[in-house]
Image (cartoon, rainbow, N blue to C red; front, side):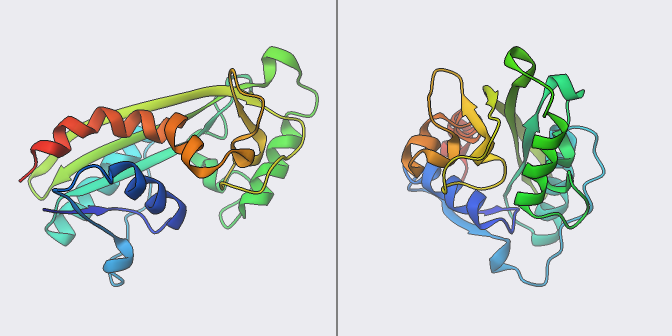
Length: 197
């Protein structure tokens, strides 16, 4: 059975494909298979709202089952920022590096517990008839004072998971995929995905 990952983000596509490998019933496509399709604007105020907007729109437009992801980094001391604007934190066309530099700047005077943060991932499965399931996963940790590592993407060089001594960007891909917020969300979807026909 076909299911479309409603994203152009190659890192997310690779991660999710890897996590769904055990499901032999799924033929996993992404938006790169539909070059003429454009995702709607993310107007939600939560990860769940944005994932739902993307899932419903893509499922109807592509007449297919869809998994949509919305995720980001939340720093409680910064009032929940970057949050839903994680990708645009330093501006509408900001690069990952610009976003990280802004975060370091905004947290420059913070220490210890005030540097606590978590990644959140919300996943929504939808068919052309509407939303079938919504799940989310968290990964809690700390924001480092400088970038570390060359792997991963986004805020990975600044994020160290609780009980680990390496930034996400210092971990190999298989380790990160085993402990990440996206993995926790995907695990909650597996039963539903196994039953799709």
